[in-house]
Length: 228
Image (cartoon, rainbow, N blue to C red):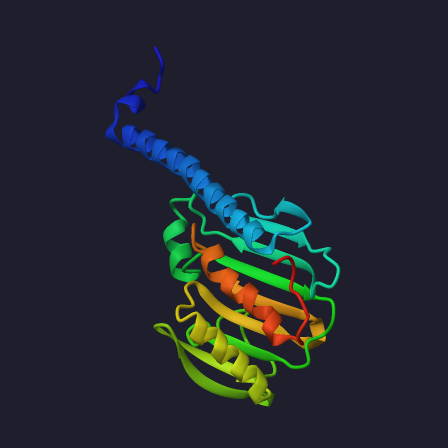
């Protein structure tokens, strides 16, 4: 007979088998959940941006995805939109609680590439997000800061002149709930606009579309962001 047969009769063995089964089931469930989330988010991005061409890339197994959306319309302000989503490791039941403590939530980073530089740097950033890793405003000391309320959240508004302050004010007045948007940044020397969101199924298009539609008003009349 099997010389280690006694092992399979021990309670700890059954616990080990049950735990292994739980981890496997959790892994499969988590991968499916993350796949559904990123597919829903990228569909929202496509609906808002309506690009002429697109490329999607997996950059981190079940937790990282990248989209490259090209805007080829003549006269558009933008040439390209990049989006990177980093998801919580829902497929890892052991690490997920730690990740929720450290990272807290899924993250969506959107970069809009301008064909021409924007005249000034400016930011509208949620107070709690301001100062997080990767969200530091390098030129904050050269900008005028104003503390504002957007919906139920406290935001910091960094501007160089009143014109951009008024643009941000109109955005907040017309859209009183920022939803999952935490940072809008105009960075002229990079010819880019950055938008950071906490992505949730069904919410990306809802809160990104008003910002995307607002952008042309910041530029001279007659400019377009993309297809409207």
